Length: 576
Image (tube, rainbow, N blue to C red):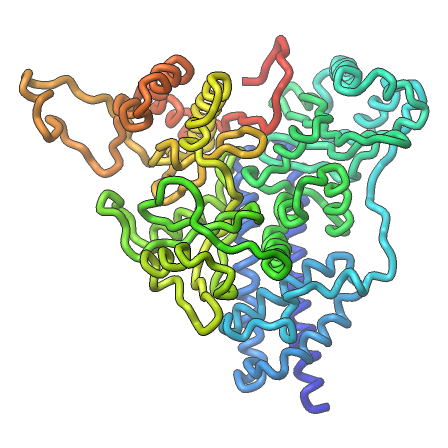
């Protein structure tokens, strides 16, 4: 009985810390509506970064409070922690966010202990939630039955989702919504008496948009439904589109996007609702998309260990040109790459390990505008030795012996990032049709421009550092040279002083560390002359220093440039 008291007290203090975190998380999230209504675009970006940083900050605070409340002999007695876990389970059984509280417990344990002590007895390696839930709760949604009057149903939707700012032109938007809905769905669907529009009760916010999310269904079929709304400053709220295509909705919830802010009283139910309309998405990605990225990490890890336990899959080196900073390996049957930092970099790379780590963590905090892959950072992964292809393991041990080690029948990966696997753009182009080459290079240029609009300069823009997703989108994924666009000095190459200057091995002009000369991009980016000419036709302005300087000026003036996560219908009054 003597150990029961500290275990119960520790469990309560851990859960109190979780409640404190959740309250701060809610406060930031609940402010999303007001920021949208007030068009506080820069504040939106700051709030998104603050909410991401919040988790680690509050885990550290709780760990400090535990250390102050208990002697190390008690707190760090690993044999006590199964009792702490048991007491904690009793506390969280009645919660509506119980799965998130398990992940929080894991984070506290890992902050206090070495990863060598990770076990299911002391932590929630496997969730205890499904078997303990007495019943399924219904998702918190609103349902609308048109019953032959689609216009009236859509009008009711917009009435229920009003803001403190009026709609700019409600009549126009209702006509547009009805027209797009009839265009997107088979004709018989709109006449079906069982047709239902079901929307999640809370509005989702991200960047400069608000989103109504749900589905349209009949007795036999269903389609996802997303209605994006924009605030046109000084003019009101505008309905921007109506999206029912699953692939387009999937892109809106993509791993390349910033996290939504949305009031979610019962996270598991909302994720279950999203999973029904986006069956191709893993629940880890769905949790992450609504800001619960740490729980997304937990779900990812559970899926990974389940895959390794139930398949013959082995780790192999990822296809593509070997990186000069990172070594990348993958599981062929698991849609993820694992990236580790090499011990020694190519001489052309002017970065160190600490800088690379900070660059990758920076990507977590900034607006990825659909053009940078989200990452998860892990420490002390342990995998069975027999799950590695011998050539893969040999290469990892050679290039990163400080990170990769063999311990008996286990392979220890001391530090790595996971990232969605994509086809490297250079490999994609090798077998692409003429049309596919045109589309990929056009999207490659758009990716560079949209990153720049978000104040991100990729640095190394070689084709091998971009990937093509299953939806055909081009995404940047190599972050060791990224910087804020406003930190770069874009210059024109000055004219040669003498004819001999152009023949010299060294430039006739000075070059500072942050200087970039866009005129040099063509020969660096494209060995293929046909691709070089095509890209010049599509995005030749990227070779002009003045283009980049104009973007820098807009960003310094505080302008947050629009980058939309969906295809916008052409309209007579497009938002600039």
